[in-house]
Image (cartoon, rainbow, N blue to C red):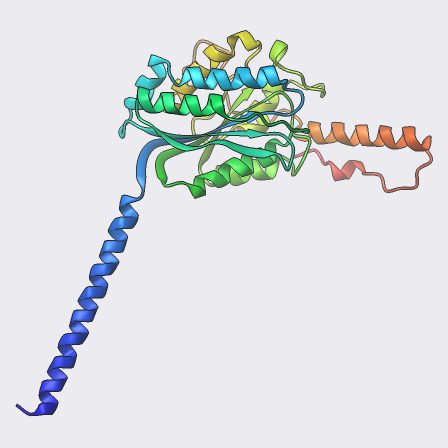
Length: 300
C-alpha cells in the first residue's frame, strides 16, 4: 500500500475516533444534565403578604402556621402518597412593587426529616417589612422562581395570601393571565374578618376568587381569624399537594371563570387618595396632571 493511502486511512480513523469521542462527551453531558433534574409531584411557591397592614406578630403567625403545617401527619401523608412521593417548596414574602424576598430557597420535601428542615429554616429567617400591596409583582416574582430550580414538577402552584386588593405595580389582570398561560395554578388564601385589615371597601375573598386565583383545580380558602390560621394552612396544603378540592365543608371557593368583582378596586382607591392629598395641599387649585377615570378602566 502506498504511503498516501496509509495516511488517508489513518486520517479517517482519527476523524472517526474524534467523532465517537464527541458523541460520548455529548451523551455524558446529556446524562449529567438529566441527572441534575429531580422529578417531583409538585413545585409549590408559598407567597405570604408582609405589607404594613400585616403586623410583625401576624407575620410570625403566618410563618409558624406553615412551619407547623408541614410537620402534620396528614400533610406528610399527602406528600409521600404521590407518584414520586416528594415535592419541592420555596417560601416567599412580598409587599409593594420592589419588595419580594425568597425567604427559604427551593427545598425537597419527601418525609418528616426534610419537612422539619424546611420548618427550621423558615422559623430562623430574618423578618422583612414593606409598604403597599402589589399582588401582581408578587405573582411575577414567584413565577420566575420556577425557572431557577433543578426540580421538575407534574404541577406548578403558587399559594398566595393577602388582606387586600392589588394597589401597586402593574394591574393584576395581565400577570395573572400570563401565569395561567404558563399552566401555573394560583390558589388564594385571603385574610378576612379579624385576620384582615383592608383599607379598601371590598370583599377580599371575592376579589381573590375573581381576580387572583386561577388555573387547573384552583381554589380560594378564606381565613377569618388568626386563631384558625394554622388549621386552615394544614387543610390547604393537603388539598394543594393532593391536587384535590373537596366540595365540603365550606368556605372553599372555586376560582371564578368570569370576574364579578372590580379587579382594579385597589388601584382606583389609590387614585382617590392621591387626588384628595393633591386637593388638600393646593386647596383644589393644582394645575398638575391628574389621573383620569380612563387611566383605571374597568376590565371587560
